[in-house]
Every structure is written in C-alpha cells, then in structure tokens.
Image 1 (cartoon, rainbow, N blue to C red):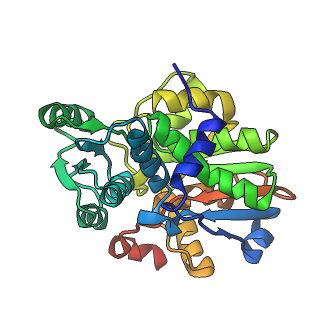
Image 2 (cartoon, rainbow, N blue to C red):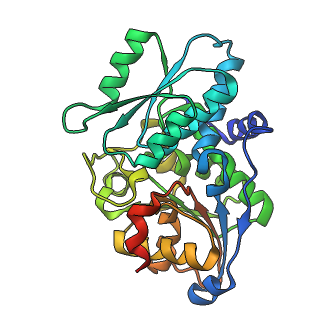
Length: 319
C-alpha cells in the first residue's frame, strides 16, 4: 500500500495556489484564560465552499488533470461538505460532477451542491450503501470515483491546512483535528510530523459515531452503521484504509466528545469569536472545552473544519 507523504502535501499546496484560500488563524484571549496555554484556531469555514474539504477535492481534480485524465466526469458520495467541494472544483475546472447523497443530508448542503452545478442522486441509507450505488452509477455512466477521504490526493490536499497553520504560528505541542473518515486527521498528521515532530496529534470524534476511537484502540478498522450525532460531517461508517495506516503510525490518540458539549462549544465560538461553525467544525475545540486534553502552558493548534451550518435547525443551541 503506497501512502502519501509530506512531499505530496507540499505538491498539493502548489496545485492549490490560486484556487484555495489561505485561511486565517484566530486566537481568543478569553479562551486561553479559561483553558490555559495558547490556542491557535485555523478557520476553515472561510475556505472555498465553506470547509477544508475543498483542499482535497481541488487537489484530486488538479492531479487528475496532470495525469492526462481530462475527459469524462467524476462521481463522489458525501453528506455535504465533500459534495460541495467537489461540485465547486468541478465547476471551476469544467468537469461534470455527480454526487450520491443521503436523503437526510442537511438541506442547505444539498442546495449548495446543486447550485455549483453538480447532479445530486439521493438514496436511503436504510436500503442501500452509498458505495454500492456509486459503483453502479459510475459503471453505467463511465465516471471516475473520487471518494471523500480514502484517497491519496484527498489526504495530501487536506494536509495543507495543518501545513499553513504550523508555518504561520510555529511549532505546536498539540494539534487537534476532527475525525470522520480520517482524511483531515491523516493529512494533518503528515504535516505535523514533518514540521514539528514532537507535536502530539489528537483526533476528536462524536461519541455517537465512535468508529475511529474504537479502531484506534482495537488496532483494526471498526464500523458504526448509521451513527447518531448532531455532527453530520462525522457520520462516516468507518475510517479509510489509507487514512488508518497513517493514523496508526502518526496520531497520538483519538478521543470522544458528547453532542451536548459539542453544541455548547459551537455556540460559544459563534457568539464570542464571531465564527459560524457547523457542529463538526467544533469537534476539535470541544476536546479542549470538555477538558480532556491538558492544554495549560501548551501551544495548541485547532482546526475549525467547516461552517456550512443549517442555521434554522441549530437555533435551539443558542437558548
């Protein structure tokens, strides 16, 4: 199995120039007073299409072109953020994109995906799997499948967020990253281990979708079918094989956070830092606010992964 390296992350950064934003790094005096240490928040809600996913999607699409694959369309499956990212990348590059999306995906994410010109195919998670339906459609329509996380170029592209963060603020004691399928966590680990080898890389996962947590402890990939969590971006049934090989080698730990803590942290960041997050986007910060990581006196990087929030459904979190 050939795994991406930090060299591939650097190559991805070159491909993304002129396409992806170099998102801001934010700090909060009040946050640091509450939890100790110094926390640097990489704000991916300000990325193209509203999340870090654009990094991997555009890198995969550009790498595909470099390999001479300029004809035909692509297919992916996603509950929202990867869907939007692939749709926007395809729109920019003139590549038709088909997205297999669960019929209970957040409505704003589905609408955004369609607004970027992608064809959305809805399915019932209780009746079929997205991989099976995607394979059927790809064969029928001669489409190349670019999955949301278990993909060489996707992982390399996602690693550019941590690369930018560490280049801007310097070495970190901790880097905390959300984990669903493992694309962002594995890519971030590649960057962290290359740029500050002593940094402890921590994954944060919803307690109701804890397949990565159990995988890390059991040593083999575990599943979580139809997980129940407010963090829709982390409702993946299992982490990818490529991702797992990097995570098992370079990640220090994966921890679980409860939805109530997640919503409270998301609301705090909305109100005090003025950054609109979706629940998944607050997973890494919640690892700190739930006091599972001893951040006192430490330099801590947190990736706020996305801001494609369904505002109407989240209104009760603000009391």
